[in-house]
Amino acid sequence: MPKKGLKPKHIPYRTCVGCREVQPKRNLIRIVRGTNGVEIDSTGKMPGRGAYLHDQKSCWELGLKGNLARALKTELTAEEHERLIEFARNLPE
Ligand SMILES: [Zn+2]
Image (cartoon, rainbow, N blue to C red; front, side, top):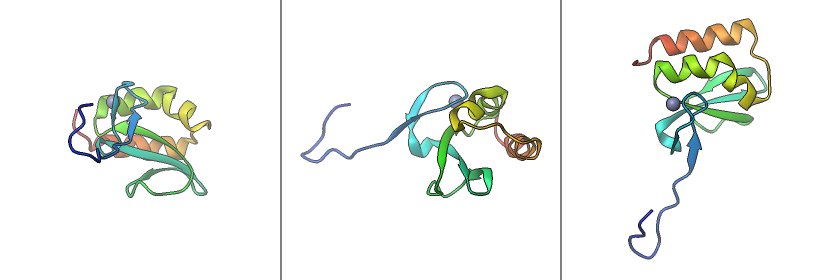
């Protein structure tokens, strides 16, 4: 990354667990395994183990095949899986 000025802003990068692309965190949607189970973290600030996916249907489909659960070190319940599929349905291709 080229440095501009004296204080380059630190941009956190994360890997999409669907396509494995590394992206600035703000371009990705965070999924968290918190106290209420696996859910979509729309604030990006929920406590728990997080994983990231593009706001792109294909990445969610890939992620839901197993990468997401692996990244969260858990098994998705049928209900959680359904909730995430439901969310992905509204995403662009
Ligand atoms: Zn992706």
